Image (cartoon, rainbow, N blue to C red; front, side, top):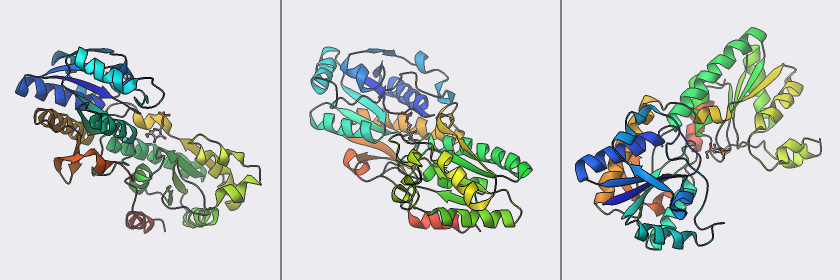
Length: 342
Ligand code: F6P
């Protein structure tokens, strides 16, 4: 069998470990041949790929990023003849199928291609941990570790100056990174997209922490919105709330907190640091296992499915189970963290 492997969407630590796991298992156990497809679906549309051998994946489980490159190209949007070109590429280069490692957008395209007769197997990738049907996604644990370390550092400087520190982490639609890193670092309030809070609700915790002699730590996911923020703040000239791009909410929150509490406040956007560098041990193991199982699934002809972690097992689920609603933070999990805010 000859299989193409691609990584698509935002990168995250662990992508290379998946590639290595699939290539090692596929070549050794099943005598499969692999090609690496450059820059996601774009490389498949343009037939831009290269041979991927055991030698090419040597030592890769600890290496961040993706050796294949990635892009957010969707074969059904903005690429003329995308799906037809893919079919031609597969036929012309005698590829038996594709392993697509990616998030919601990638898996939605994979599902559609599969329905159009192109054999695709999925491997879930989301640093935000927002895909359904998999309990954890690789990259998430690494991001939580990086964010936790950053917050520990923010706390020592915050303590020295008696300042309130606002740390902004990734999480476009869901607050898993904020919840986990905030709990780990002992945040006094965690702001996530699933739970809108008013400025008063935030400052109540900031003031309570300061009264106990602590330098308040506020953790905010990039997709968080204050309750009624558009109506309440746009007339105060705070247009930053209404800007189209995500991120930067902490830079808006910090002056509001300072104004409302009188406590000097600083903000830090952790941004892409959370996605860079080596994966944690947990992510290396998870990603490698997903790669190994992807090779097994390909041999079994399990096209139209993705490998996923449920409990401690790697299972196969149809794309439809992973797509649709996002895996968001349930209120019960938020309440566990909230019990620690004080
Ligand atoms: O979806 C993963 C993610 O890291 C989000 O948390 C973030 O909003 C987005 O990607 C950033 O995308 P880009 O790397 O394209 O700026």
